[in-house]
Image 1 (cartoon, helix red, strand yellow):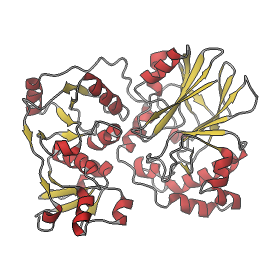
Image 2 (image 1 turned 180 degrees about the vertical axis):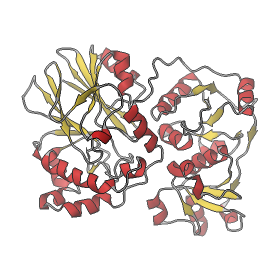
Image 3 (image 1 turned 90 degrees about the vertical axis):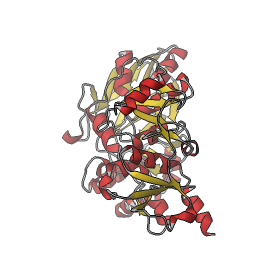
Image 4 (image 1 turned 135 degrees about the horizontal axis):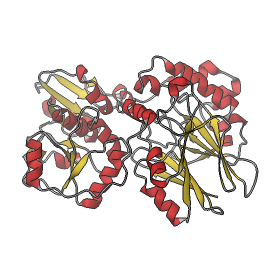
Length: 461
């Protein structure tokens, strides 16, 4: 048996390729939308992808299950559990608790493990070539290394009202009635790692075991004592801010993400054509450079979505494709970088990219306004906006600042003043630049604090 973990550092998300080497067949669990990595794995191992499935209706990224099934002709499986409000809106084979997918000697059994979401499945994997006992659990957003999937996202991102309490009770029951009945040696392969907003204390190690979590996870003593209320209180305390785009992911993943099909390579665009499109308000420009370079000059009204590990995350902060249908023009070193950025963006449903340019020559530019920490106190502003997380703000902030995390700014414009200048800051300036340029793009007058909170703090000492 072959198990490959495909990890997206950007979204801290793991998908899994499970293959039977004897029969040359494979199943993929929780794929992302840029599906080439799975097709390449199948080719490299002489396998055919015959099944695609997912653990639940995801909130933090747009699922590639439909995309991969359509491209390969594989059978598509999704959860049929969770009740009438949590059924998928597209055609697929439904999996219920105890159902199996079989490829050669390998059996993948669905276990209904609600709590993070009502329909959530985990997958228990048995390699029949060695034993008739399961050895692996793909736990999705149920159990992480050292933590559990948060049960409050339906409230935070899907319009639920106090569903977190029922979800927490379900998590307690799923641990008690399912997870802790597995043998200690069963290897646990979660759907996320450290950095994901799907839990509050995810470990950085890629896998764990049932026995290790039973002994050392924070929730172990509560389960051992049967203390459901203590478990619920601890679980719900201190969960991180949920990004506003999670609501769109939930809806699109439930209804069925749009199929992309083969994507032609992005083309380099003529600067004059881009300038004309910008002037006609038919295009949006994305500066993918670091904020320090953007501050030296960028296209007027440009978004700042830095290329690198957080492109998808920051892209989803800055672009709402439900409201802004203008295709994006990417600033990139060349086609390879532009294509990689596009791959990241489609993981969060930002599909419309017109092409790329390699420089700013011929485009309308300006230098974004900034203010130094020394000038801040006397600077005329209508709001000082802290775009860090609530926990960071609580740990220390500039007096008089208003906290609204960067992933929620565009969706909460009613909390911002409609007149005057907004000054933004984060910890180092990266998140502030993403949020500030998104607000400028939306028509706000925004000034960034040079060096952000770290520089202000140093200026106080």
